Image 1: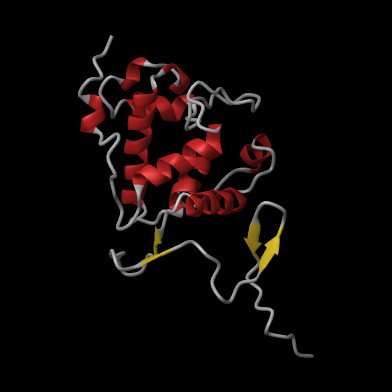
Image 2: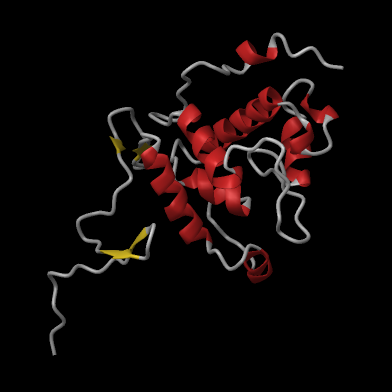
Length: 196
């Protein structure tokens, strides 16, 4: 059995850690845990044919790939079989790699988590398997949850800087449509009337 005594400090577990110019990794991890499993580390997905498990709902393929990057984690076949500390360490490492890949753009984390790529591309078959939830809808719900955690995102430009932080909110040119527990930005400015 692997000794996890040094693992917590090696991966900053329990510490406030910032990566990606304003991205708060701990708030990102809390958002993923809540959205994916309600914080249940032993959870196995209820989606038929999926191998997603654990607090972060890693598929078996992604888990095995990412677990190789964290000492001792690859001994667990599925995420749900790993202790909380190991799941957190693997998820933290993966989030940090996503932030690095995206230039610190937190809004890309949910896209990569849900689709496997930061562009949010997803096949119709995969979307159907996920009950029709589009990457954009997942991202919107995720960002709303992240904002509730007090998270902020960077605004990518020629290169994000610590001063380029803003809470995730629709721009003034967008109108929100209330769909119950979530508001989607429609991109419509109600002050502009069509001309004939």
